[in-house]
Length: 429
Image 1 (spheres, one colour):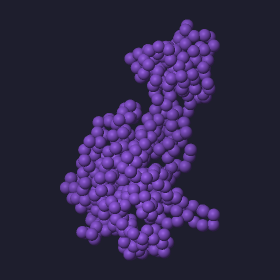
Image 2: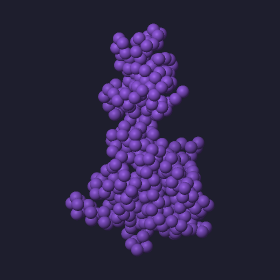
Image 3: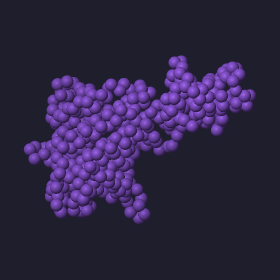
């Protein structure tokens, strides 16, 4: 039994397919069924005078999303949705569906309410296929470069990105938190494996209502010994290029279903990414948009969007003020006001895709920064141990996979970049 894609590749002759009814249209003499499977859709026609009464009567009762197995002759037909049509000779209804709750123009929130069913729509199916390509590309990229896949705990005792965005968890008689990042545990791992990466969920208790935030998202993180900021920028640019290249290679059909012009992604695959400093970013915002940003302020969404509008690829912004960045980022030895870090901003207003830095290797500097942020260094003793025994320069970054998928698919909301989104208001289904 062939899938729809195999049947269309055959082009003519007898075929057998199985799937679900995507659309149906009935008359006294003909019943048109558009059948879908995980590969594609195809139009099938049941002619009253070409099948038995049993098959005709069974077909008349079919509603959208009924599951079927059918046989017939396939031929090319330019009027059909995907250019082929099957004249049905035999049909088995595996299950008669009830009235499907997704009608012609459902609202985005309703589709999220019934996400367990709206996963079947062509849009979300296309996004999930692209998402799968993105995940595969991440693994492929790092493994070809000799990185080891490495996991860290999902339950943690110390924050890495700030206590205000932690989910607290009751852990027997103790208090723990859901992880925001693997970072501290990754820094321990590089002293054994040197080059490591992970793909795992992270959790941020941010009370954000924007189209760019999830409380649970998939985090592609990397950490490498002996790597400086320049090497880290090359690594990040290479990763994004590889992901986009693979999507363009594998998923042009899905991009077409989503109405995404694949040519808009080609510059990212083919061109070098601009690299500017935070100071240069402020200058550009002033010159191009008359935005007067006080030095020392973090860049907001509106400023990132304006900067991204100047380029047709992602842009890398380096050396942010140390006051707006995490305690583990290394101070620039040439400018004590900034740290050796960068954010990679996606094109077309999709915001920060990657946050990165060279790590502080001095135990004394780390202790001083923790105290300045009101943290007790004693709570981080195990982490500080990594700086006592052969500390070396090292760097790493985290990439929000759903943000990358949102940009590649040109989605209106990040909630469509994951099968079952979790936000401040959405916990079901």
